[in-house]
Image (tube, rainbow, N blue to C red):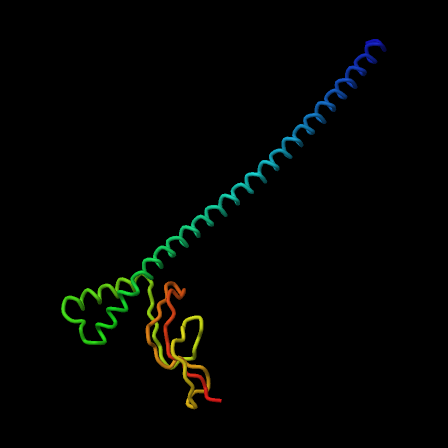
Amino acid sequence: MSEREVNSDSNNAESSEAELSAAVEEALNEASVVVDEIKTLTNDLQRLQADYSNYRKRVEREKESAHEFTISLVLTSLLPVLDDIDRAEKHGELTGGFKAVADQLNSTLQKLGLEKFEDANVPFDPNIHEALVHSTSSEVTETTASEVLQPGYKFKERVIRPARVAVVDPQE
Protein backbone atom coordinates (compact mmCIF):
# COMPACT_ATOMS: atom_id res chain seq x y z
CA MET A 1 0.00 0.00 0.00
CA SER A 2 1.28 3.36 -0.89
CA GLU A 3 1.73 6.26 1.40
CA ARG A 4 -0.98 8.15 -0.38
CA GLU A 5 -3.50 5.35 0.20
CA VAL A 6 -2.59 5.22 3.89
CA ASN A 7 -3.07 9.00 4.22
CA SER A 8 -6.37 8.77 2.33
CA ASP A 9 -7.60 5.95 4.61
CA SER A 10 -6.45 7.91 7.64
CA ASN A 11 -8.28 11.05 6.44
CA ASN A 12 -11.41 9.01 5.69
CA ALA A 13 -11.28 7.43 9.16
CA GLU A 14 -10.83 10.83 10.82
CA SER A 15 -13.66 12.40 8.81
CA SER A 16 -16.02 9.49 9.50
CA GLU A 17 -15.09 9.63 13.18
CA ALA A 18 -15.79 13.39 13.19
CA GLU A 19 -19.09 12.83 11.39
CA LEU A 20 -20.01 10.07 13.83
CA SER A 21 -19.08 12.28 16.79
CA ALA A 22 -21.16 15.16 15.39
CA ALA A 23 -24.10 12.81 14.78
CA VAL A 24 -23.87 11.43 18.33
CA GLU A 25 -23.70 14.96 19.77
CA GLU A 26 -26.71 16.04 17.69
CA ALA A 27 -28.68 12.96 18.79
CA LEU A 28 -27.82 13.68 22.45
CA ASN A 29 -28.98 17.28 22.05
CA GLU A 30 -32.25 16.13 20.47
CA ALA A 31 -32.72 13.55 23.26
CA SER A 32 -32.09 16.28 25.84
CA VAL A 33 -34.76 18.47 24.22
CA VAL A 34 -37.19 15.52 24.17
CA VAL A 35 -36.45 14.77 27.84
CA ASP A 36 -37.08 18.44 28.73
CA GLU A 37 -40.39 18.35 26.81
CA ILE A 38 -41.38 15.15 28.61
CA LYS A 39 -40.58 16.74 31.99
CA THR A 40 -42.61 19.83 31.08
CA LEU A 41 -45.57 17.76 29.89
CA THR A 42 -45.36 15.55 33.01
CA ASN A 43 -45.40 18.62 35.26
CA ASP A 44 -48.34 20.05 33.30
CA LEU A 45 -50.21 16.75 33.62
CA GLN A 46 -49.54 16.57 37.37
CA ARG A 47 -50.77 20.15 37.81
CA LEU A 48 -53.87 19.37 35.75
CA GLN A 49 -54.56 16.23 37.81
CA ALA A 50 -54.16 18.21 41.07
CA ASP A 51 -56.47 20.95 39.76
CA TYR A 52 -59.08 18.37 38.78
CA SER A 53 -58.80 16.62 42.13
CA ASN A 54 -59.24 19.94 43.97
CA TYR A 55 -62.19 20.81 41.73
CA ARG A 56 -63.84 17.44 42.44
CA LYS A 57 -63.37 17.88 46.19
CA ARG A 58 -64.71 21.46 46.10
CA VAL A 59 -67.78 20.39 44.10
CA GLU A 60 -68.41 17.55 46.55
CA ARG A 61 -68.15 19.96 49.52
CA GLU A 62 -70.48 22.44 47.84
CA LYS A 63 -72.93 19.67 47.01
CA GLU A 64 -72.92 18.46 50.63
CA SER A 65 -73.29 22.04 51.88
CA ALA A 66 -76.26 22.67 49.56
CA HIS A 67 -77.82 19.39 50.69
CA GLU A 68 -77.45 20.33 54.38
CA PHE A 69 -78.77 23.83 53.73
CA THR A 70 -81.85 22.42 52.01
CA ILE A 71 -82.52 20.00 54.85
CA SER A 72 -82.11 22.79 57.42
CA LEU A 73 -84.66 24.93 55.51
CA VAL A 74 -87.18 22.08 55.59
CA LEU A 75 -86.49 21.43 59.27
CA THR A 76 -86.86 25.13 60.08
CA SER A 77 -90.25 25.20 58.40
CA LEU A 78 -91.34 22.21 60.51
CA LEU A 79 -90.42 23.83 63.86
CA PRO A 80 -93.87 25.44 64.39
CA VAL A 81 -95.44 22.00 63.93
CA LEU A 82 -93.07 20.56 66.54
CA ASP A 83 -93.97 23.43 68.88
CA ASP A 84 -97.67 22.63 68.47
CA ILE A 85 -96.99 18.94 69.17
CA ASP A 86 -95.03 19.87 72.34
CA ARG A 87 -97.87 22.11 73.56
CA ALA A 88 -100.44 19.39 72.89
CA GLU A 89 -98.31 16.90 74.82
CA LYS A 90 -97.94 19.28 77.80
CA HIS A 91 -101.72 19.75 77.94
CA GLY A 92 -102.40 16.01 77.70
CA GLU A 93 -104.03 16.29 74.30
CA LEU A 94 -101.50 14.07 72.53
CA THR A 95 -103.15 10.64 72.58
CA GLY A 96 -104.04 7.74 70.33
CA GLY A 97 -103.14 7.77 66.66
CA PHE A 98 -102.01 11.38 66.78
CA LYS A 99 -99.39 10.46 69.42
CA ALA A 100 -98.08 7.67 67.17
CA VAL A 101 -97.76 10.11 64.26
CA ALA A 102 -96.04 12.68 66.48
CA ASP A 103 -93.59 10.05 67.80
CA GLN A 104 -92.81 8.90 64.27
CA LEU A 105 -92.27 12.49 63.11
CA ASN A 106 -89.92 13.19 66.03
CA SER A 107 -88.03 9.95 65.38
CA THR A 108 -87.62 10.71 61.67
CA LEU A 109 -86.40 14.25 62.36
CA GLN A 110 -83.87 12.95 64.88
CA LYS A 111 -82.56 10.50 62.28
CA LEU A 112 -82.11 13.41 59.88
CA GLY A 113 -79.97 15.13 62.51
CA LEU A 114 -82.35 17.51 64.25
CA GLU A 115 -81.47 17.93 67.93
CA LYS A 116 -83.75 19.56 70.45
CA PHE A 117 -82.20 21.35 73.41
CA GLU A 118 -84.10 22.75 76.34
CA ASP A 119 -81.84 22.60 79.37
CA ALA A 120 -82.83 24.89 82.23
CA ASN A 121 -80.55 26.23 84.97
CA VAL A 122 -77.51 26.33 82.72
CA PRO A 123 -75.21 29.29 82.09
CA PHE A 124 -76.70 31.69 79.55
CA ASP A 125 -75.00 31.35 76.16
CA PRO A 126 -76.07 33.94 73.56
CA ASN A 127 -75.04 31.51 70.81
CA ILE A 128 -77.78 29.05 71.74
CA HIS A 129 -80.17 31.12 73.88
CA GLU A 130 -82.47 34.04 73.20
CA ALA A 131 -83.42 35.94 76.34
CA LEU A 132 -87.11 36.86 76.52
CA VAL A 133 -87.55 37.52 80.26
CA HIS A 134 -84.94 39.05 82.54
CA SER A 135 -84.67 39.11 86.34
CA THR A 136 -82.07 39.16 89.12
CA SER A 137 -81.50 36.83 92.06
CA SER A 138 -79.02 36.37 94.87
CA GLU A 139 -79.18 32.60 94.33
CA VAL A 140 -77.11 32.62 91.14
CA THR A 141 -73.45 33.55 90.67
CA GLU A 142 -73.52 33.94 86.89
CA THR A 143 -76.10 34.80 84.26
CA THR A 144 -78.30 31.71 84.00
CA ALA A 145 -81.02 30.46 81.68
CA SER A 146 -83.46 29.65 84.47
CA GLU A 147 -86.49 28.52 82.45
CA VAL A 148 -86.93 27.39 78.85
CA LEU A 149 -89.97 29.07 77.32
CA GLN A 150 -89.48 27.52 73.88
CA PRO A 151 -86.94 24.80 73.03
CA GLY A 152 -84.07 25.39 70.64
CA TYR A 153 -83.00 23.18 67.78
CA LYS A 154 -79.69 22.29 66.18
CA PHE A 155 -78.98 20.61 62.88
CA LYS A 156 -75.47 19.15 62.49
CA GLU A 157 -74.10 21.31 65.32
CA ARG A 158 -75.56 24.47 63.75
CA VAL A 159 -78.27 26.26 65.72
CA ILE A 160 -81.31 26.69 63.50
CA ARG A 161 -83.37 28.21 66.31
CA PRO A 162 -82.04 29.35 69.68
CA ALA A 163 -83.86 28.29 72.83
CA ARG A 164 -86.03 31.12 74.10
CA VAL A 165 -85.37 31.43 77.82
CA ALA A 166 -85.95 33.40 80.97
CA VAL A 167 -82.64 34.76 82.24
CA VAL A 168 -81.58 35.41 85.82
CA ASP A 169 -78.60 37.65 86.58
CA PRO A 170 -76.74 37.66 89.91
CA GLN A 171 -77.86 40.41 92.23
CA GLU A 172 -75.19 43.07 92.78
